[in-house]
Length: 68
Image (cartoon, rainbow, N blue to C red; front, side):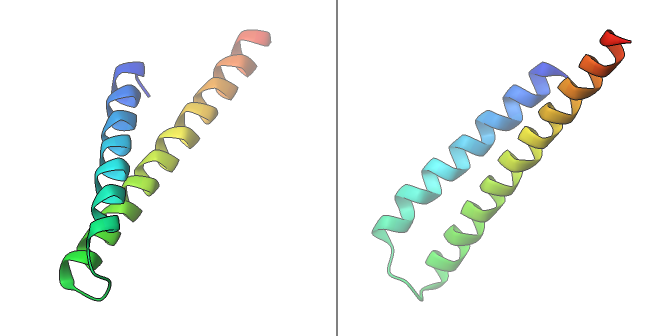
């Protein structure tokens, strides 16, 4: 994973999580807007998790290939 792609994906993830987190504080539970915003929060968290896992795997691979 390119470092620029990873940074961009992580910034999008942070934006989604922060924006939807703030919106969840203002919306009424049970409304359609609340459900969509909760779904957006989950997508942002999932994207962040994928990016972090990709970075960890890439670093381990580089460390293993560089050490041998």
